[in-house]
Image (tube, rainbow, N blue to C red):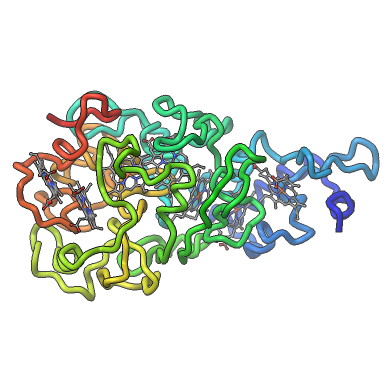
Length: 380
Ligand code: HEC
Ligand code: HEC
Ligand code: HEC
Ligand code: HEC
Ligand code: HEC
Ligand code: HEC
Ligand code: HEC
C-alpha cells in the first residue's frame, strides 16, 4: 500500500499533540490509562503513522505525508520521542537529583547538571554526562566540547534519538539502527544492531538490579563503532588505552568472580559475582543471571559506559575520577551513582577485573589516561 493511500485512513490535525501527550502519560507511568502494546506505536502497523506524523490536510483528502518530507507532531524527532519517553518514568527525567527507574541505558536528565566533577579540578558541566541530544523542548543542545563523535565523524549538532534508534522499529535490540543510512543519509552505519535482551520499560517496579538487568549477547562494541571506531584502541585518539572488544582471559575472569568489593576482594563466589555496574557480553548471559563471566564472555563499550548518559563524566557507569566511590556527588552536589558494594573505602570498579595493588591511593586515571591535552584534566 502506498504511503499516501495509508495516510488517507488517518487524517489528523492539531489533536495529534494532545493524543500523543495522553499516550505518553499512559505508557510511562503518570496516570492509569490502558496502554497499547509496543507494536501499536513502533511496529509499523498502518494505523500507527498518525501517532507521530501530522497528516496535513491543506485541502480535504490531501495528505502531506508523501515520503519525502514527513511532517512530525513535534518540533523535532527527539522532542517527538520525548513526548512519550520524556518525563515521568522515561529516559529524560524531570530533575537530575531524582532520576527515574534505571532500565540500563542511563538517563539524559544528567545533561541538566551544572557540575559533575567530584575529583580534583574545576566544574565539569552536564554536557559531559553523555550523549547530548538536541531537544529544543528540554533546552539541551550540541555538546560544547566535541563537534563530532570522538574517534569518528558523526556531527554532534545532529545527535538525537533517531541517530541511534529507528522510529519505525526495524527489529534490532531496542530498535537500534542496523547497517544503512540514518537520519536521511547524514551517516551510514556499517555494523548491525547489537544482540541483547532488555528489561520491560513499562514496569516501573522492574528497574535494574543484580538479578534484573540487560543481557548483552553480542556486537555492542561494533555497533558503537558505527560512530566511534574502536575507541581506546591504539590510534583512536583516546588518552586512555584499553581493550574494548576482547574475551575475558582466565586471570580477569577469576578476579571478577572472586571480587566482592574492597571489603572482600578475594572471597566472593562465581554464582553471585555479577554486578550491573560492570556488565560483560556473551551468548549465555540472561536478564536474571547473577553468575560472573565464562570463557566466551567479552568486555565491550557498555562494560564501563552507559549508552545514554550518567551522573559522571563520559557517561561512566561509575565515576572514573574518584579514589573512593563514597565521594561521588559530595563536591559537585550531583546525584551519587549507587555503589554496588558497601563501605566507605570502596574504590574504582576497575578493580572488579584488576588485582593490581599499585595505585598509591590515587584514581586509576591519574596515571592511566592522563595527558596535558586530555579533555578531562586528570588528578595529579
Ligand atoms: C514513533 C513515531 C513514528 C511512527 C509511529 C511513525 N513514524 Fe515515520 N518517522 C518518524 C520520525 C521521528 C521520522 C524522522 C526520522 C529521523 O529523524 O531520521 C520519520 C520518518 C519517516 C519517513 C521518512 C523516511 C525515513 O524513514 O526517515 C517516512 C516515509 C515515514 N516516516 C513514514 C511512516 C509511516 C508510513 C508510518 C506508519 C506505518 C510511520 N512513519 C510511523 C516517526 C514515526
Ligand atoms: C505515542 C507514544 C510514543 C512515541 C511518540 C514514541 N514511543 Fe517509543 N515506545 C512507546 C511505547 C508504548 C513503547 C512500548 C514499551 C514496551 O512495551 O516495551 C515504546 C518503546 C520504545 C523503545 C523500546 C523498545 C523495546 O524493544 O523495548 C524504544 C527504544 C523507543 N520506544 C524509542 C522511541 C523513539 C526513538 C521515539 C521517537 C522517534 C519514540 N520511541 C517515540 C511509545 C512511544
Ligand atoms: C550515531 C552516532 C553515535 C553512536 C551510535 C554512538 N555515539 Fe557516542 N557520541 C556520539 C557523538 C556525536 C558524541 C560527541 C557529542 C556528545 O558527547 O554528545 C558522542 C560522545 C560519546 C561519549 C562522550 C560523552 C561526553 O560527553 O563526554 C561517550 C562515552 C560515548 N559517546 C560512548 C558511546 C557508546 C558506548 C556507544 C555505543 C553504545 C556510542 N557512544 C554510540 C555519537 C554516537
Ligand atoms: C548514542 C545512541 C543513542 C541515543 C542518541 C539514544 N539512545 Fe536510547 N538506547 C541506546 C542503547 C544502546 C540502548 C540500550 C542500552 C542498554 O540496554 O544498555 C538504548 C535504550 C533505550 C531505551 C530502553 C530503556 C532504557 O533506559 O534502557 C529507550 C526507551 C530509549 N533508548 C529511548 C531513547 C530516546 C527517546 C532517545 C532520545 C531522547 C534515545 N534513546 C537516544 C542508544 C541511544
Ligand atoms: C575499561 C573501561 C572502558 C571501556 C571498555 C570503554 N571505555 Fe570509553 N572511557 C573509559 C574511561 C575511563 C574514559 C575517560 C577517559 C579520560 O577521561 O581520559 C572513557 C572515555 C570515553 C569517551 C569520551 C572521550 C574521551 O576521550 O574522554 C568516549 C567517546 C568513549 N569512552 C567511548 C567508548 C567506546 C565507543 C567504547 C567501546 C568501543 C568504550 N569507550 C569502551 C573507559 C572505558
Ligand atoms: C570487565 C573487566 C575489565 C574492567 C572493568 C576493566 N578492565 Fe582493564 N583490562 C581488562 C582486560 C581483559 C584487559 C586485557 C589484558 C588482560 O587480560 O589482563 C585489560 C587491560 C588493562 C590494562 C593494560 C592495557 C594494555 O594495553 O596493556 C590497563 C592499564 C587496564 N586494563 C586498566 C583498567 C582501568 C583503569 C579500568 C577502569 C577504568 C579497567 N581496566 C577496567 C578487563 C577489564
Ligand atoms: C601512580 C600511577 C598509577 C595508578 C594510580 C594506577 N596505575 Fe596501573 N600501572 C601504572 C604503571 C606505571 C603501570 C606499568 C606501565 C605499563 O606497563 O604500561 C601500570 C600497569 C597497570 C596494568 C597492567 C599490568 C600488567 O601486568 O601489564 C593494569 C591492568 C593496571 N595498571 C590497572 C590499574 C588500575 C585498575 C588502577 C586503579 C585501581 C591503576 N592501575 C592505578 C601506574 C598506575
